[in-house]
Image 1 (cartoon, one colour):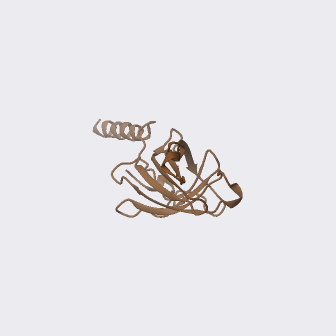
Image 2 (tube, helix red, strand yellow):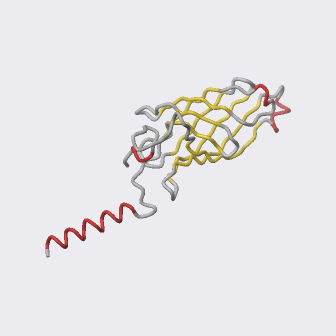
Image 3 (cartoon, helix red, strand yellow):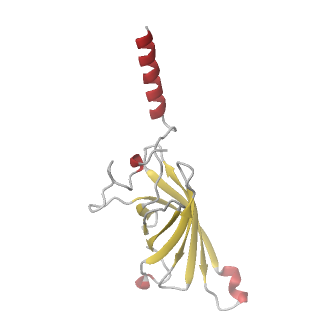
Length: 164
């Protein structure tokens, strides 16, 4: 009777951990991402303070023939499984800066998704043009899977690797 009760308890605890909405995965920013507009971003290792750097290659611009990979610098909250974060991209091909803020989620299929809001600030010639110098938008990023960087259970960019 005691063996049956402990086995049943173990089974119920196991099922509770697998239940939807109770993910034991930790969302990781590290790796390659693509957004709903086709832009690509690579985030290097996040350090123990939550700081990270990387690169951003936009798919959209006012001057598309001049697009170049640009550096990004950011920080994330390190205390939760689905962290908030922010980063700045200093565009190398135009006098513009963009700041992103968002959250890293594990969706209902166990996939990592970055939901962001951004502000893009363009350089203007004078204060009178300030009224139209800032744009706002949002993006949804998903992990970019490539032949060279296939995320698997042993990949450092896989959500299944990190426990909460």
